[in-house]
Amino acid sequence: AQTVTQSQPEMSVQEAETVTLSCTYDTSESDYYLFWYKQPPSRQMILVIRQEAYKQQNATENRFSVNFQKAAKSFSLKISDSQLGDAAMYFCAYRSAYGGATNKLIFGTGTLLAVQP
Amino acid sequence: DGGITQSPKYLFRKEGQNVTLSCEQNLNHDAMYWYRQDPGQGLRLIYYSQIVNDFQKGDIAEGYSVSREKKESFPLTVTSAQKNPTAFYLCASSIPRTTAQRNEQFFGPGTRLTVL
Image (tube, rainbow over all chains, first blue to last red; front, side):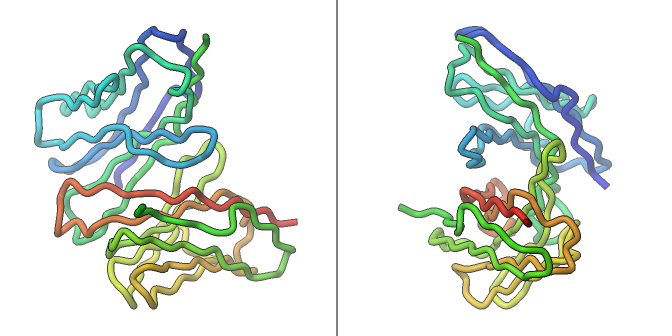
């Protein structure tokens, strides 16, 4: 079974600085998708960024980028120029590309990011 | 605007009572999901449905039931058999994976259930 591990329960960053959130996963599959979701205090889950395992190029969305290391099964999220609105719980998630039509997401336990003014 | 709505936002239940959480989407998505969120445990899948009139158990289905009579609606019933129902419940929807490989899940705003 696949698992997702986020080893940093809490992180803190100064406004305008850069922070990296860690995520590792375990799978025997070669094709899959990885996601970072943000959950602000409103508790609405928002997709931040996605990565297809078959793509070597790291995904980027404005100030958010990932460092995808397939061999190491690592998928870290880098937030550049941190803003107060980035303060939230961040979840890493895995989805298999196999196994029928199930679009099941497997989530890590989350990292709570605080942004200091 | 298209989206997913969940109601109510807060729900209180007495022990031994069944309660139903509503989830409606107007995104024309075929697939819908229910997750439970507990502190320190991330999100866990309760039930999912890929198409109307069909649904499957997720990882923690015991004590829950669902129905999928309409494409737009996927209500979740928390029964008295659920031993620890106090949690935050999130509903999500997506286009089936076979249609679009890059599809993501869109989430509703959630329902906080508290058992008194």
